[in-house]
Length: 436
Image (cartoon, rainbow, N blue to C red; front, side):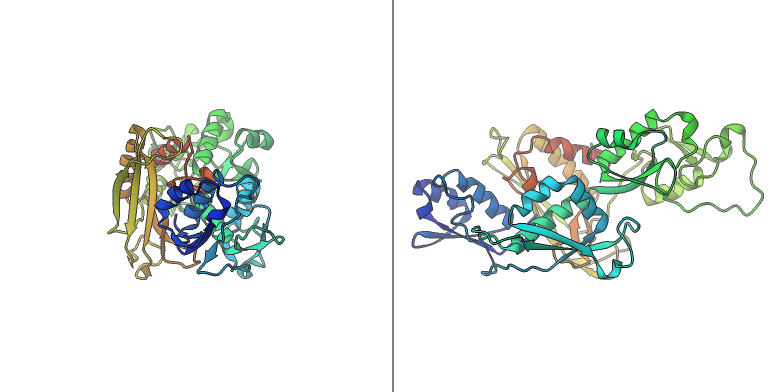
């Protein structure tokens, strides 16, 4: 994801033993040469990947960033603007993504977090929608000339990718031990709920779905009617007349949506074996055609991606790390600016478009994923309109929750390759949306 487009690094060929190899590596970046120095422009991801490549041909004992002077708009900044982020997402990152966050900050920077002015009277724990301010500051003076703004942008990219795949939900745990569940599902964050036998869970959608399935299979039937088995997606029904009579069986089964006993004549059972009040299920399906309990998809899922976008595909012969036998598929997404419709946050207001580039190996599996991504694009699932964590502006086109590789190198922490599990992960994400 190209958030920074005006980064410049200066490379001094005196720091490299093999000048011919250096020129060959830099050729793809169209460098400007001035004396013994090369000036290279690009995004932060591109230039950081270049730094990784160059580290293999530098003189021994030269630090990894020696000879690289990073500039944003020709001037490095040591004080950067704070970023407003979700308190829940930030709490998850601190507890479950500490290692990845540490790689972004390195030894020279720290993150300072404080409640947003609008949230001072509330706490993140008690208010899931609270906002916190995150500021990147230099921890101590370093010989590495990396501006704080570059680190800030790396954090923003990481935050947005994490937030796009994060789900907060309440699940019944019955007699299950919280520590045992945490051990079994290390990617999830468990917090006690105000309801007995229920916890609030934060984590990637795939892992929360697996947790719900595990609890469903390992919860005694006698306790299932006593707890809430899914998020409330519909308001509680009101009955204007006398309460209908229920059979003994219906009294033993409550609707997971309205929490009332299911009337036998009003019962709707899905193929996943979960039952609901027919009215409640219709209301839930009007919102999203998935089972409110387990998330199984029913029907065609359509997203809120703005109309008029393009998904253009090209190939080249260069290979991606981990897929040296294959060429590369390059996906160019273009979503033009426009006016928001009824399914967007602010209908009638303009939104800012976006242009993104992603990469896949040109293998049989990569080509199969490409077809699935094309289907997801046609179903308006790749992008949405919301708040840009990069600029802080609302009404902007952003990624939805289908992950893409936006860099060719750098590994998972830099949204690039090698990442041997990526194709399987994105296939699972697409399958959740009924695309397979």
